[in-house]
Length: 397
Image (cartoon, rainbow, N blue to C red):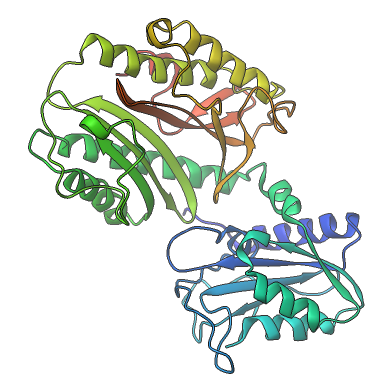
């Protein structure tokens, strides 16, 4: 049965205690957002298996604060405590003691004050609003709250066997959803109808829809519609349109993230074929480089070399490309970033990592296209989970 068991959560918490102790911390606080959006939920979920679906609502002094969030306090010595505003929790139960609080900030401060004075690491800094941070600092004398997001990234870099199985299941679901989108993308259909087909496939299989970017025709060089919906219900596809979709969702919290582009109801023109070939072939060249010990900068360089040799680049150069070839993948879009230069370029790949390699081109005069696949790094080589096996990659169109 797919999922993460209680023993693995216990190992994760113990590993985090060790990381915190080595950093001179008394413990860590993981702070995460809820609301069914899958944005910034991963730190609490990774340690406890708990997700808060209550959406954020503004604070009301004296009634509640930080609604729609959750926190885990994990001392170096002592049990994990999960704080949430949820009054009842379904099975499976979180892998921590559970306490309900209307004011999450003051409840967390009370628990921190019970610890010996010292530094407490905060994992999830970008999710904690400035007023909450200031309030915490003002009511925990003798304690210092310091940023510790690097500990979270370090803990989640290499995936366990159970996590890898979930990423494989997510990749398979992503492929199914993309196939449903492609089948729905016929002349006369709207962008919204294509999106609905993909979303229905995800939810029908028990996955969670996270998001997408859709564009087509004259707007295919953009990522998505500018309104709250990332697709348009008033945009009907025509034969010969370029259609581009970047789709992401999850199985038990573990993501798939893939992008495809194609021509609707017609064979590609020469210019469209150059564009589609360039994004696909450069990514596939990078996939073949995803092996333990390889430096991430080498992977990016290989992608770049293949793109530069493409017929598209010969006619248009590198215009419309930002130089980033992908990112880590797990419970979120995460480090390392796949680029030739930058903080991740010198890092070496390890078995158990998962990366999403991608290329996206946006040229108003030509159109736009994207191609992205998720790949697990194994001791025997790359394992694509959103694409066919390596020996058939180059045949895919």
